[in-house]
Image (cartoon, rainbow, N blue to C red):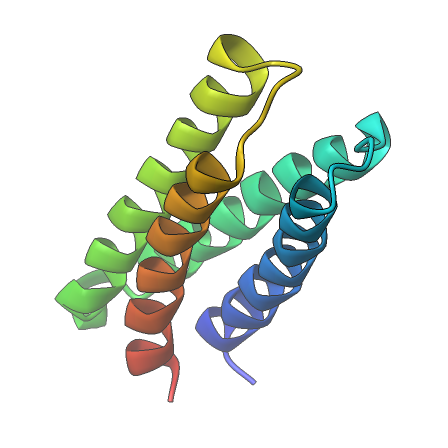
Length: 115
């Protein structure tokens, strides 16, 4: 299993945690702070893993890997700004869907590279 495939598995795990968070928002339940923090830290760890995989590939790294990294990084930064700064205690479902949609596009791009 390559490092890119491991980072894909990490992003899928983080995305499943994001689906849990979105379902809690939809059900209007209180989101435990540790769950949101774990989602963010997991995303950061998966980004670091993907960045390492992209750097280790050197010239052989496909351009799509870098595009996936950029899209996933923008989703991470957007999530941090939206849910930790601007809408700290009042996350809405459309914002969660926007954040998750960006992540889904990044995961799809990474999937295309990892297969």
